[in-house]
Length: 153
Image (tube, rainbow, N blue to C red; front, side):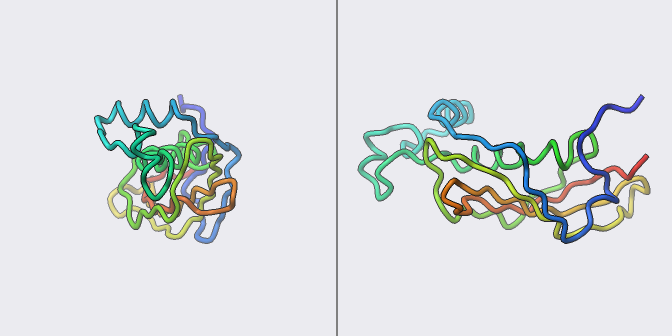
């Protein structure tokens, strides 16, 4: 029995495909606080409003590792839900603008690479460029991710 899926199969992920993801998410203080403390990150820029208020940003910055986690998670329903074998790696990840508490993030993905797997005949490798964009239309995270994807059954 095959598990249910909403993601796309390898054959449906052609280079040049751009997906505007349906899920949008407003980042809360709780998101940032829980993620930062659960990962044992003591950076006061993410946790201490008094400290962060005295920096060039004037306020708490959202942990960039939360930002990339949120970005990838937002892409799952339309891309890889039930159709991926594994993440293979991330490359060229950048955070060109900060994310602040209260920012609303949307996600966009472009397929930038695709090839058959040389070791798994029923799979292929797809390279995605994921982009997180805030409510001011600023790209706040851009990450390339390679995934091993199932072929259509």
